[in-house]
Length: 72
Image (cartoon, rainbow, N blue to C red):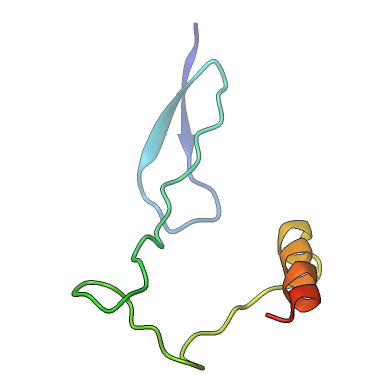
């Protein structure tokens, strides 16, 4: 069993994760604040938020196609 230290490349993280057996370790999601009307939640308002995407991203492109087909 080999233990290797892997740095987070292309992120602003300064921490290192320990990976065993070459397993992929996903970085923690930074966007976890829910939408709502209670304290600590992001307000739900028309035209307040924008969805940014690029057509070259296969995951974003599929989601944009579905949103366009559904009229969202």
